[in-house]
Image (cartoon, rainbow, N blue to C red; front, side):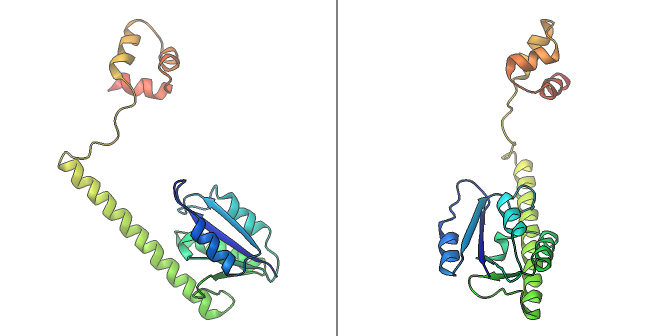
Amino acid sequence: MTIIGYGRVSTLDQDLTIQEAALRAAGCDIVRTEKRSGTTTVGRAELETVLQFLRPGDVVMITKLDRLARSVGDLQDILRTIEAKGAVLKATNGSIDTSTAAGRAFVNMIGTFAEFENDLRRERQLEGIAQAKQAGVYKGRKPSVDVAQVRALKAQGVGASGIAKRLSIGRASVYRALEG
């Protein structure tokens, strides 16, 4: 039996030190970490590695459930993979243990609430952006393309590909600038 720790943070500027220390203190033989968004399992190479190399009797150890998945669908897929390999999921604080029926039910409840919380956060964020736009405070990011420069080059007879190359922008950006 191998205890494999998995830690994740969402952005490059976040620190994994606390998670790594907690996983090692929980007796993990191997600790895999990554700095990737938890909103999807796509592109999470370390998680994929952990799941691929699981053997019967192994334990996947996490610090918190939201480090593993942010959606119930992804959580269920990960749990099915772990179970199919004959392994279990546990948390460092002992609150999660899928080796028992109660532990599996608890994981599903926590996952549902975590997804609900994420949806509420997203709704609040969108409401705040809408209010800020209405108040004229939020204008989005600054334009990265100088429309006047694009139009001037077009007036000189330069084609879209030539404009894109000269200004180091995509051709689609050139077309949008010419339309607007």
